[in-house]
Structures are given as structure tokens and as C-alpha cells.
Image (cartoon, rainbow, N blue to C red; front, side, top):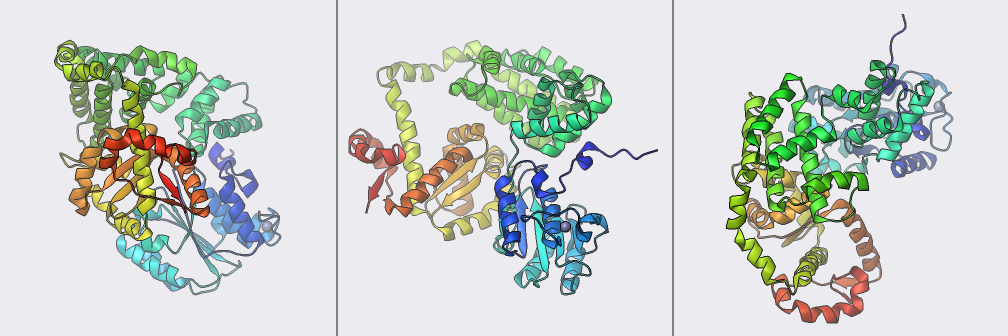
Length: 540
Ligand SMILES: [Zn+2]
């Protein structure tokens, strides 16, 4: 009987040329090998299943390959042919399996010994953020004076948890989530090779890619399970495998909530339990759907036409209420991890959410506040919208004008305290939100946060006052804060770098004064608005 090898293992890349995506990283690594400029410590960070460990293993082989071709492994020499598990000079440590102190201590003792077979002795430490403080200290001592024959590759999904002292001694590579097309192509390639192209149609491939959220490993494992299940796979098979539900069922649950239909909401949850579904994943699905509805209701043409048609049934729902239930889903997901009785907890939360909409009609008459405001500014409605955008641009400009590295290091050093507040009554949602952020630009008085999801930016904007209060509590500074998406930041950063190179200087603008004179300022700024839209700059 032959042993069944999982598709993931079978199609795990053995050469740089076989790695899906991550091209920039691969090119840099290959070049360093070609030029023989190899570092002694690398950190590979990024979401799960994006190739960190695979690339670490390939790099370990490529630096030791006897006939390296263009910086890649040759696949034929003695070093390439040997199984990586049998290679005593390539040492893999899983920091998640224990706290690692003993293993790191052992590294410190053995690191000075020359490799037995290879040119370089390599330590791959997976999930390195799980190391205890004392293990990190031990590791740091080794990283301070690494022998020339040793290379450390540290892999982590949570780079925020790595001490800055360790980070500063490593070359950093940030692995990105793969896009759906990259995953789809790889899945098709595998199906073709397995002679199963007829078993899975394009829609299923798309669904698998979409559900695996940028992680190739999850995608291949899901494909593997689906293929072993049926001769012909349907999308519902895939949903069933994961214990999740399809779009229609998700929309049904949300409909019950926004109609304030408590009884049907609870019945639905009961039936999901009796079908043995994966409830945390379903809550996750619902959270994403609500995010999508919020984005659909506040922007245009963000999703495909077909999907927007489905979302349009919720176009009349009050945005604040949607944001409120989305926050509650956030909290629910967090609290579920600790709860001893998930089912009751979920019911309580869903009743709470449905109640938000239960007295919908009553509240509508009550909340005339909003209405009056809207009627009031009928004339200059569009003006007020642009001023929000203006303000944000000024805040971004202000951050860039004062940014300094020392403030950032000091800020990030204390950032971990936020974790103490994830269960705090008042600040739990803020803490959870900020933990998803990355403080990109920091000065003594302002901070620019970036978020991976557009939706998190909306949440940030909605809660700015509370965030300022929270940060004051932690840092004793009343920061001016602004949140943007990481996509957006990429472009702003590019512009910023090119402006700085041109000698263009950023000037701080007092936002409170700006509010009063904003109309006059706009004209003056017209001349230079091509530089940043509405960001204020002066030329030197
Ligand atoms: Zn080789």
C-alpha cells in the first residue's frame, strides 16, 4: 500500500521558481545568493499559508547548493538531493510547541560549532513570536554576534510581538496574502496534474480561492478534501466541508436581525447547531457580510455587479446601526474564544443585535436629530463631505511633517499594553481595533495608523474621540490621530518619498484654525494641489 501524500506536501515548492507570488522577496533573496551577500538573520512575517516556511526551506538549500543556478537551487547536487529532515545542519524549531528556552539555549551552545556537511548551518524558528521573554533574550545574545557560518530565519504571523531589539538585527521580509487569481491558477495547475480538472468547475475554484483568504496552504488543503469527497464537486460541498453556509443563508440570518426578528434569529442558530456547523466560522462570515453591506452603503462600485445586487437589499438600513452590530460581532468573536458556553453567548449577542432593530420605527421618529441636520445642510451638503476628506488630508500631512523615528520606537515599545484592554468594559473594541492597526507614522503629537481592511478605517473614523481618550490614558499624550487603509498609505508614502527627494517640505497645519478658514485656504492651495490633492505643502 502506498502512503497517501497530501496535495499540499506533494506540491510544496522545492525551488524559488515554483513559489507562487512573493516575487519581490524571491528576487532579493536570489540576488543576495548570486552576489554572495548573505545576511545572518532574516525575519519572514506575514499571514499564515503565504509561503514563509517554504521560502525559508528553499533559501536554506539555495545558500548551500553546490551548483546554484541564478540564485536558485540546482535540484541535482548532493546537498539538494538530501531530504531536508535528514540534514543535520538545517535545524527547524517550532516555537509554538514549547516556550523554546531550552532549545534556544542549546542554539547558544552549538552555534559556534562549524556545520557538519554544509557551508551554512541554518536555524529556522517558526512562530517565533511565541518565544518567552527569556528565550528572546537568549536569542538576542546569539544574534548580537552571529558566527559567519550561521543563518537564522525567523518566521512569524505576528511581527508586532517581536521585540524591537531582535527586529533591528534582522533583514525583514513581509509576505503578502496571495491574491485570488494567483491561488486559482495554482489550484488549476494542481487539478490538471492530478487529472481532476473535470471534477471541479471554475466557480468552485474561485470559491475555494476566495474562502482561503490569501492563504495558499488552506486553499490546497480544501481542494484536497473536496477532491477526495466527490467525483464532481459542487459549491455546497465546499461550504459543508468547512461547516459554513452559503451567501443566501448568510443574507437570511442578517435579514432576520435587521428586521428585529428575534424568534427566527434564534431558531436559525439552533438549527445551525443541530447540523453540527462550525459556528465561529459562520460568525466570521456574517461579520464579513456586514462589513460588505457597510462598504456598499457608503461607497460606489466597490464589488462586482452581481454581488452588489445582492447587497442592495440592505441599502436602506441605518449605517450607524450596521456599524453597531458589526462591533458586536467583533466582540462576540473575541468572547467566544474564552466562553465555556458558546451557544448561550451567541444567542445573547444575536438577541442584542436583533433588538437594535426591534423598535426600528419608534427610533426613527425619535432620532430626529440626524434628520434635522440633514435638512439643515441641504444647500451645502457636498461641502461638508469634502471637508471631512480635507481634514483627513491635513491630518496625514501633519503626521508626515512631524514624523520622527524616535517617537515611533517609543510608541511601539509600549503598544503591547493595549492587549491588557481587550476585555476592558469601556475600551475593549477600541483595543481590539488598534491591535489590528499598524502605527506607521508617529511624532510627539500625532499618529497615522494604517489598517488592512477598509472597514476597519470606517470603524476608526467613527471612534476617533474614544481612541484619542484611550491613547491619552496609555501614553499621557493627547495625540492627533488619523486612520487610513494600507492600500492608501502605499500611495501616500510613494508621493512623500518623491516629494522629500525633490526638497518639498511638509508644514504642520493647526486643524482647529483650519476649520474656520478652510474656504479661503482652498484657493491659496490651488496652485500646489497637484502635489497631494488637498495636502498642504510649501516648496523650499
Ligand atoms: Zn544543488
